[in-house]
Amino acid sequence: MIVYFDTSAFVPLIVKENASAMCLQLWQAADQIVATRLLFVETSAALARAKRSNRISDRALAKAAVLRDELWSNVSVIEVDQTLMLRASEVAVEHALRGYDSVHCAAADLLVDSELVAATGDRHLLAAWQALGVATFAVEN
Image (cartoon, rainbow, N blue to C red; front, side, top):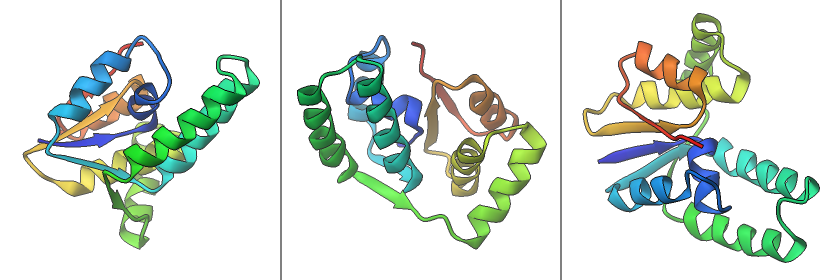
């Protein structure tokens, strides 16, 4: 099984959330993990936001960054090239998605693999993937 992780499915692997066990189980079941390079940026922003809102301490942030890097080393990275950028622009309009969500949506859509499952906790992204015929895994927080 190939699993595409968006940020809402990746961050629970790093920071304890209701969905953490579910996301870890999916991660461990995957034969291959895929995501765009944007996942790294969004994860860093989510960790910084958790620190600013006092959900995690300075020490926890440092540990989270190390874990992020360890997990990232297992991700097969999809680059944001011209084809992906154009498809993301289309799905942004077709499915009323935000910028980075449209990139996640298009990346999984362009993979076109029967082994692919796309994981997210974002209901808009989930609906878009489902409308495009992408197999999904709903992360519930």
